[in-house]
Length: 123
Image (cartoon, rainbow, N blue to C red):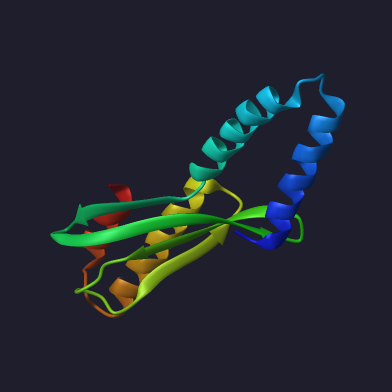
């Protein structure tokens, strides 16, 4: 995670503790647990089997100019020497766009047919 994001979260936590009624320690623990749970769910990776190949998909959050974006990556190690990537504002859209990028490259390199590409994108 970027240093600026961590610093911002720390500053927000300190400000909240200053303005919340005492004792802050009990609220700090609950608030910290909630923030860490939310942050840990932002990163996602999965393994799937598509058209007989083991493939991986992942998404990670990134901040650019104070806006949250999602980087997606789709790759099939051992079958294709390339990966599909994306950067979107949509969490679910990042994985979908990375998959489209991968399928487009696989189709261009003739690793799959148009029918397989359509099946892959629909499934």
